[in-house]
Length: 223
Image 1 (cartoon, rainbow, N blue to C red):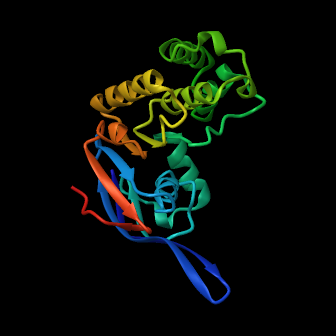
Image 2 (cartoon, helix red, strand yellow; image 1 turned 30 degrees about the horizontal axis):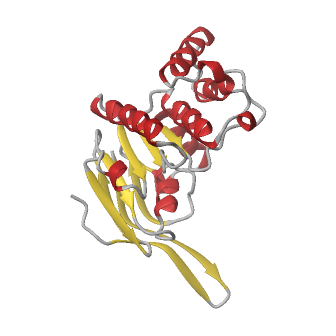
Image 3 (cartoon, rainbow, N blue to C red; image 1 turned 30 degrees about the vertical axis):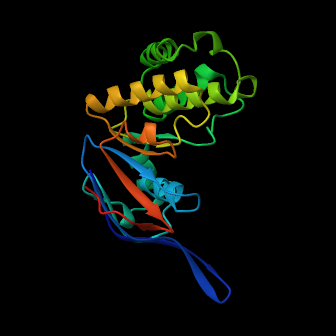
Protein backbone atom coordinates (compact mmCIF):
# COMPACT_ATOMS: atom_id res chain seq x y z
CA UNK A 1 0.00 0.00 0.00
CA UNK A 2 2.75 2.47 1.02
CA UNK A 3 6.38 2.62 -0.06
CA UNK A 4 8.81 5.36 0.96
CA UNK A 5 12.24 5.47 -0.63
CA UNK A 6 14.99 7.79 0.61
CA UNK A 7 12.43 10.31 1.84
CA UNK A 8 13.84 13.45 3.47
CA UNK A 9 12.31 16.62 4.91
CA UNK A 10 14.30 19.71 5.80
CA UNK A 11 13.99 23.42 6.44
CA UNK A 12 16.49 25.88 5.04
CA UNK A 13 17.77 28.85 6.95
CA UNK A 14 20.47 31.43 6.34
CA UNK A 15 23.73 29.55 6.29
CA UNK A 16 22.40 26.02 6.51
CA UNK A 17 19.68 23.39 6.56
CA UNK A 18 17.91 21.56 9.38
CA UNK A 19 16.70 18.02 8.66
CA UNK A 20 13.49 16.73 10.22
CA UNK A 21 13.47 13.37 8.40
CA UNK A 22 16.52 11.60 6.99
CA UNK A 23 16.65 8.81 4.38
CA UNK A 24 13.37 7.17 5.36
CA UNK A 25 12.80 3.80 3.68
CA UNK A 26 9.54 2.19 4.73
CA UNK A 27 6.99 -0.28 3.39
CA UNK A 28 3.50 -0.68 4.81
CA UNK A 29 1.33 -3.45 3.45
CA UNK A 30 -2.45 -3.33 3.20
CA UNK A 31 -3.89 -4.53 6.51
CA UNK A 32 -0.84 -3.61 8.61
CA UNK A 33 -1.14 -1.91 12.01
CA UNK A 34 2.04 0.13 12.46
CA UNK A 35 3.10 2.31 15.38
CA UNK A 36 5.59 5.18 15.08
CA UNK A 37 7.38 6.00 18.34
CA UNK A 38 10.23 8.24 19.41
CA UNK A 39 11.09 11.26 21.57
CA UNK A 40 9.62 14.72 21.03
CA UNK A 41 11.12 16.32 17.93
CA UNK A 42 12.01 12.98 16.34
CA UNK A 43 9.87 13.70 13.25
CA UNK A 44 6.89 11.47 14.04
CA UNK A 45 4.09 13.94 13.30
CA UNK A 46 5.99 15.28 10.28
CA UNK A 47 6.18 11.77 8.82
CA UNK A 48 2.48 11.21 9.51
CA UNK A 49 1.62 14.47 7.75
CA UNK A 50 3.56 13.41 4.66
CA UNK A 51 1.90 9.99 4.68
CA UNK A 52 -1.45 11.75 4.91
CA UNK A 53 -0.55 13.92 1.89
CA UNK A 54 -0.96 17.09 3.93
CA UNK A 55 2.66 18.04 3.23
CA UNK A 56 4.12 17.81 -0.25
CA UNK A 57 7.43 19.54 0.48
CA UNK A 58 9.97 16.72 0.76
CA UNK A 59 12.61 14.90 -1.25
CA UNK A 60 12.51 11.24 -2.20
CA UNK A 61 9.74 8.94 -3.37
CA UNK A 62 6.34 8.17 -1.86
CA UNK A 63 4.09 5.61 -3.53
CA UNK A 64 0.54 5.01 -2.31
CA UNK A 65 -1.59 2.33 -3.94
CA UNK A 66 0.86 2.39 -6.87
CA UNK A 67 0.43 6.15 -7.34
CA UNK A 68 3.66 8.21 -7.30
CA UNK A 69 2.54 10.76 -4.71
CA UNK A 70 5.81 12.68 -5.01
CA UNK A 71 4.94 13.47 -8.63
CA UNK A 72 1.29 14.46 -8.11
CA UNK A 73 -0.18 17.94 -8.06
CA UNK A 74 -1.79 19.35 -4.92
CA UNK A 75 -5.21 18.65 -6.43
CA UNK A 76 -4.35 15.02 -7.20
CA UNK A 77 -2.93 14.48 -3.71
CA UNK A 78 -6.07 15.97 -2.18
CA UNK A 79 -8.22 13.58 -4.19
CA UNK A 80 -6.22 10.57 -3.02
CA UNK A 81 -6.47 11.79 0.57
CA UNK A 82 -10.24 12.31 0.40
CA UNK A 83 -10.89 8.93 -1.21
CA UNK A 84 -8.66 6.73 0.91
CA UNK A 85 -7.40 8.33 4.14
CA UNK A 86 -8.92 9.12 7.52
CA UNK A 87 -6.78 11.34 9.76
CA UNK A 88 -6.97 11.73 13.55
CA UNK A 89 -5.14 14.93 14.43
CA UNK A 90 -3.47 15.48 17.79
CA UNK A 91 -5.16 18.90 18.04
CA UNK A 92 -8.54 17.50 16.84
CA UNK A 93 -9.03 20.04 13.96
CA UNK A 94 -12.79 20.04 14.40
CA UNK A 95 -14.65 22.86 12.63
CA UNK A 96 -15.68 25.32 15.35
CA UNK A 97 -18.81 26.60 13.60
CA UNK A 98 -20.26 23.11 13.01
CA UNK A 99 -22.01 20.86 15.52
CA UNK A 100 -20.72 17.40 16.37
CA UNK A 101 -23.13 15.81 13.89
CA UNK A 102 -22.17 18.29 11.18
CA UNK A 103 -18.45 17.68 11.79
CA UNK A 104 -19.03 13.96 11.32
CA UNK A 105 -20.87 14.58 8.07
CA UNK A 106 -18.05 16.59 6.46
CA UNK A 107 -15.92 13.65 5.14
CA UNK A 108 -19.05 12.08 3.62
CA UNK A 109 -20.00 15.27 1.80
CA UNK A 110 -16.51 15.38 0.27
CA UNK A 111 -17.15 11.92 -1.16
CA UNK A 112 -20.60 12.80 -2.52
CA UNK A 113 -22.40 10.28 -0.28
CA UNK A 114 -26.21 10.72 -0.66
CA UNK A 115 -27.89 12.65 2.17
CA UNK A 116 -29.96 9.73 3.48
CA UNK A 117 -26.85 7.56 3.72
CA UNK A 118 -24.91 10.41 5.36
CA UNK A 119 -27.60 10.76 8.00
CA UNK A 120 -27.59 7.00 8.66
CA UNK A 121 -23.81 6.85 8.99
CA UNK A 122 -23.72 9.86 11.32
CA UNK A 123 -26.40 8.28 13.51
CA UNK A 124 -24.40 5.05 13.62
CA UNK A 125 -21.19 6.87 14.63
CA UNK A 126 -22.98 8.87 17.32
CA UNK A 127 -24.31 5.63 18.77
CA UNK A 128 -21.08 3.65 18.42
CA UNK A 129 -19.04 6.33 20.18
CA UNK A 130 -21.70 7.05 22.83
CA UNK A 131 -22.01 10.72 21.86
CA UNK A 132 -25.67 10.89 20.79
CA UNK A 133 -26.29 13.43 23.54
CA UNK A 134 -23.53 15.66 22.15
CA UNK A 135 -24.70 15.75 18.52
CA UNK A 136 -26.01 19.33 18.61
CA UNK A 137 -23.10 20.78 20.61
CA UNK A 138 -20.21 22.75 19.15
CA UNK A 139 -16.56 21.79 19.75
CA UNK A 140 -16.10 24.65 22.24
CA UNK A 141 -18.79 23.05 24.40
CA UNK A 142 -16.90 19.74 24.62
CA UNK A 143 -14.04 18.64 26.85
CA UNK A 144 -10.71 17.74 25.26
CA UNK A 145 -11.49 14.05 25.60
CA UNK A 146 -14.90 14.47 23.98
CA UNK A 147 -13.35 16.38 21.09
CA UNK A 148 -10.83 13.56 20.63
CA UNK A 149 -13.64 11.00 20.44
CA UNK A 150 -15.44 13.10 17.80
CA UNK A 151 -12.17 13.41 15.85
CA UNK A 152 -11.74 9.63 15.81
CA UNK A 153 -15.36 9.10 14.77
CA UNK A 154 -14.91 11.61 11.93
CA UNK A 155 -11.80 9.77 10.73
CA UNK A 156 -13.51 6.39 10.47
CA UNK A 157 -17.00 7.41 9.28
CA UNK A 158 -16.13 7.28 5.58
CA UNK A 159 -14.60 3.79 5.93
CA UNK A 160 -11.14 4.77 4.64
CA UNK A 161 -8.61 2.16 3.56
CA UNK A 162 -5.94 3.90 5.66
CA UNK A 163 -6.31 5.55 9.07
CA UNK A 164 -3.52 7.82 10.32
CA UNK A 165 -3.76 8.64 14.03
CA UNK A 166 -1.57 11.14 15.86
CA UNK A 167 -1.79 10.27 19.58
CA UNK A 168 -5.33 8.84 19.24
CA UNK A 169 -5.73 8.34 23.01
CA UNK A 170 -3.70 11.32 24.19
CA UNK A 171 -6.62 13.29 25.69
CA UNK A 172 -8.68 10.34 26.90
CA UNK A 173 -9.01 8.68 30.27
CA UNK A 174 -8.19 4.98 30.40
CA UNK A 175 -11.65 3.55 29.66
CA UNK A 176 -12.18 5.93 26.72
CA UNK A 177 -8.73 5.10 25.41
CA UNK A 178 -9.42 1.38 25.62
CA UNK A 179 -12.67 1.86 23.69
CA UNK A 180 -10.90 3.80 20.93
CA UNK A 181 -8.13 1.21 20.65
CA UNK A 182 -10.69 -1.62 20.61
CA UNK A 183 -12.40 0.14 17.70
CA UNK A 184 -9.15 0.67 15.78
CA UNK A 185 -8.09 -2.93 16.40
CA UNK A 186 -11.47 -4.13 15.15
CA UNK A 187 -11.20 -2.04 12.00
CA UNK A 188 -7.72 -3.44 11.43
CA UNK A 189 -9.00 -7.00 11.75
CA UNK A 190 -11.57 -6.12 9.09
CA UNK A 191 -8.78 -5.00 6.74
CA UNK A 192 -8.22 -1.29 7.42
CA UNK A 193 -4.56 -0.28 7.45
CA UNK A 194 -3.61 1.81 10.49
CA UNK A 195 -0.54 3.89 11.23
CA UNK A 196 -0.47 5.57 14.63
CA UNK A 197 1.89 7.83 16.54
CA UNK A 198 1.98 7.32 20.29
CA UNK A 199 4.17 7.68 23.36
CA UNK A 200 2.18 5.00 25.21
CA UNK A 201 3.71 1.48 25.15
CA UNK A 202 0.31 -0.07 25.90
CA UNK A 203 -1.21 1.65 22.87
CA UNK A 204 1.81 0.68 20.75
CA UNK A 205 1.34 -2.95 21.78
CA UNK A 206 -2.02 -2.98 19.98
CA UNK A 207 -0.17 -2.79 16.67
CA UNK A 208 1.85 -5.40 14.81
CA UNK A 209 5.19 -3.58 14.64
CA UNK A 210 6.91 -0.44 15.85
CA UNK A 211 8.93 2.05 13.81
CA UNK A 212 11.32 3.91 16.11
CA UNK A 213 12.38 7.43 15.07
CA UNK A 214 15.24 9.42 16.57
CA UNK A 215 16.42 12.77 15.21
CA UNK A 216 14.58 12.06 11.96
CA UNK A 217 16.16 8.64 11.36
CA UNK A 218 14.58 5.21 11.59
CA UNK A 219 16.75 3.52 14.17
CA UNK A 220 15.34 0.02 13.89
CA UNK A 221 14.79 -1.78 10.59
CA UNK A 222 11.10 -2.22 9.65
CA UNK A 223 9.93 -5.79 10.26
